[in-house]
Amino acid sequence: MLSNRPSEGVHEPVDSLELCPAKGIVGDRWEKTAWLKLPDGAPDPRVQVSVTNLNIMALITGSEERARDCGDNLFVDFDLSEANLPVDARLRVGEAVLEVSDVYNDACGKFVQRFGQEAYQWIRDPANHPLRLRGIFCRIIQGGIVRVGDTVAKCG
Image 1: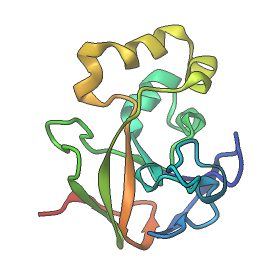
Image 2: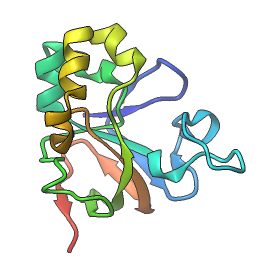
Image 3: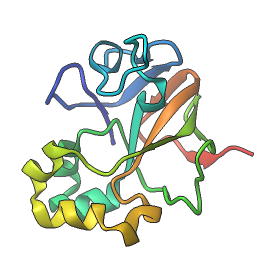
Image 4: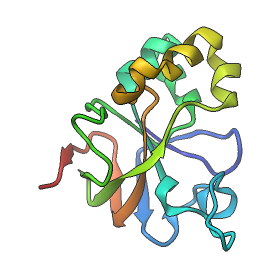
């Protein structure tokens, strides 16, 4: 699944996304309202794209469709663990290349509001950190179009 987030709390299902190293996902709120900023106030490119494992989010939410409420951009069937994708590893998704960020996704307050304290604690359990159950943040290295059904593969 793919989702664009034009504004806070809005998760629009889409068939494709255009990724741009300078702008993030075209039409996504990252460029205007990134939650993580650089010292100069610019949006931090380490959180341009949020990627999560669709199977894990469907387990938490009860369905693939409800998984979209997690607020991520890319919902994939791929091992996002530290063992498989260390920081700085690169992924090819469709035409785009992403770099795994060092910013850890440990779930935000909105996550606990939407899915409950038990799910939130499971995600944040230190034993689960290496599994990256909540997903990963990525920087866009090479722009391009990502479509539903595109292959996700490690580069190199």
